[in-house]
Image (tube, rainbow, N blue to C red; front, side, top):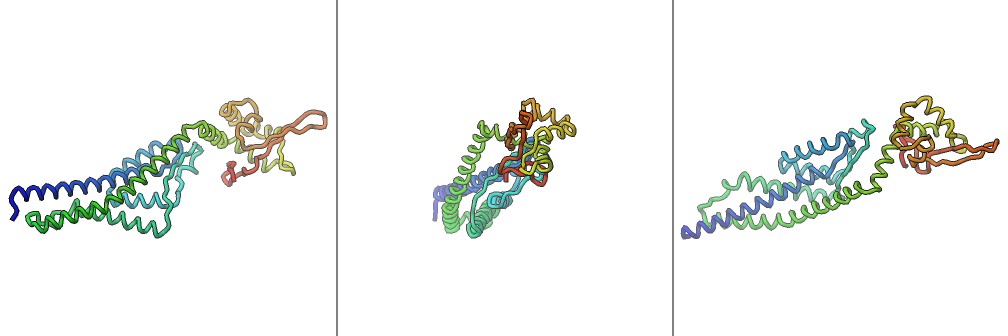
Length: 287
């Protein structure tokens, strides 16, 4: 027969173990929320902030079961592009954190996470009806179960923490790249290459080039200045140049050369550089 003091110590120890395990489940849940909320984002520069903020707000309202489903769906699935990419000419940014795994590895991970959700729900919602806190045997049984649960959770939390650490490292590398001069240049080039005049220049090379693949810049100039007057002025301003030749050079997707004329002058010709082609939506893309 246990004394009152012994019963108090036993129950205090059980309460400590219950709290410890609940905190472990909450740690796992917080890591899942972080990964689901931040592991994938995509959108144009106008919609991206609003979309990411809404996703984070929605994520933090989800149950642990929903989080596990979202985590598996986004982290182990193929990348899916955002719907607003094709609907907007604005610069587009995307980030997608993935874990490569074969079918067997994925299924094992799914089962482990499903088991963790089940155990978490059992501990939080159904613990008291299962055990008699006035029974010595029942308390010992519960203490052993909580210790076994702790031992099962510990490596899973460590694995998930490794995923979080890897994600943070990847995101920091992406942020460092975005803040670099290389990204600034590529971002500016991407914006220039989406300009209607640059796209039109690429289209003209398809329709008005000579047999050798080169197109007279003078011909392209007449077409653009006639049909794209306001766009041409805007493109000059965007590229920070004063001539069509300047636009050709600024886009960095064209080859440009000089050719002598019969009267001793020179004429300029251009073509799409090797590796570039005109896509179905009339944009120059690298093949």
